[in-house]
Length: 495
Image (cartoon, rainbow, N blue to C red; front, side, top):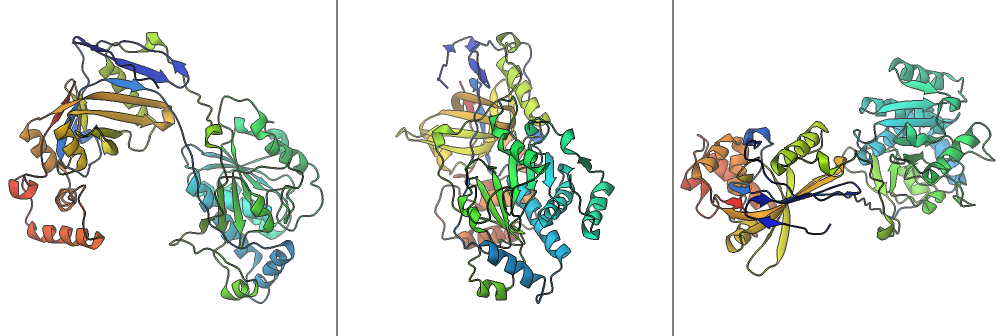
C-alpha cells in the first residue's frame, strides 16, 4: 500500500483500504466525541513504561501460510497389509482399537492445523471399509473438539462395529446426509472435507456413488466462488490413488492434508499438499525392527506428528480470495478515532485472538528500523497507550528518535490500521497505577527480564525470578528499588 500521509495543522489523515476496495478519504477529528479505551479493558502485558500514540492511520489487508516437514520411511501395499495382520494377530490388537486410535489421530491432526472458528463445518465422506470407520471415529472426536461435523455414509456396513459407530454419532445429534443432499460445490456448505472413502487395501475403479463423490473433490478448486474453497483432508490414502504409485493419471484428488496411519505408504511421496501428518501412536518395536521403519518421535502426549518435506511453492502465486462487506467513502467516519473504535469493536466481536496486539516500529539515530509486537492498553484523544521496558531496544530507539509507527492486523476481518507519530513523556501516576494493576507474577517478571540484554541462559532468568519473589515476599510497591531508574520511563507519542 502506498504511504499517503497528509500533514495539516488542523487535520489528522487516515487512508482506509478494505479488502480489494481502494478508497481514500481525508478525515478531520471531531472536537465533540473522542472514544476512550481504559487499561482494564485489555489483557495484561509484560513490560513496564507507558507509550502513548497520536493518531495517523491506514487500513488494508493480506494473508500468508507456510508449513514444514521431515523425512521418514514408507510402506508398500504388501508391507502395509502385513503390518495390519501382525497387529491384529500375535500382537493382540482388535480392529475397533486400531480404528479408535486412527480416528483420534486424524481428528487431532485436523484440529492442530485448522482452527475451530474458521473451519467449523466438516463433512466426512466415509466408505464401507476400515477407512470409512476411521472417518466416523474422527467425526465423533471432532464434535467433542467443538467442530460441527456432518456425515455422508452412503454404503453402510452392517457389522456391529460400524452400526455402533453410527449409533454413537446419532446420539450426539450429528447429521447423516446422502450424496443427493450435498451441493455440487461442496465449498458452499463446508470448510473441511474428510476423505475417508478408500484405504490401502482398495483395488479397482470406484463405483457409484463414490466415483461421483471423488469427482466432486477433484473439481473443488475449479469453481469461481465468493467464499474460501474447502480444504481436503485424506485419511492414509487419497481415495482413487494407487497405494504405491499415487495419482497415476494426474487427475485425482489433490488433498491439502494427508494423515498417514501406522506408517506412510509409498503414494505419500507424491503428496504435494501443505500438511502431512503421521497418526497411530501404537507401533511396537517388533514391527519397527521387522520393517526397518524410521518413524519420527511423537511430541509430548500428541497422537500425531508432522512429517514430510515442505512442497516447493511459488510464493508469488499464493493468493487469497478476500470477501468482505463493501467499504464506501460515504460510510467512513469523519473522526478517525471513531472509525478506529468501530473497527476495534468489530475485531472484539469477531473473537479474534488478541485484537489489541500491534506491531511497534522504531528506528534509532542510525536509521535502522526494528519491529516487535506489543499490546495496546488504551487510547483517547491524546493517543494510543502501551507499556515497555525502557532498557529495551525499542525504548533506546525512541530516546534517540521519537518518531515511530503502529500496525494493527485483524486477519479475520481483512483489515489493517497503520498509525504514525512521535513520543513524549507522560505522568508517573499513570505508570504507577498500571504497575499496581498487574498480577504479582507479572510485576516480578518485568523486574527479572532485562529486555534486549544478553543473559547466560534460561536458568539464570528463572533464578532471578525466584530471588526477586523471595525478596519481595511481603508484597511490592512502586519505588525506585522495584522499578529501577534504567528500566521504567514514561513517554507519550504525539503527532
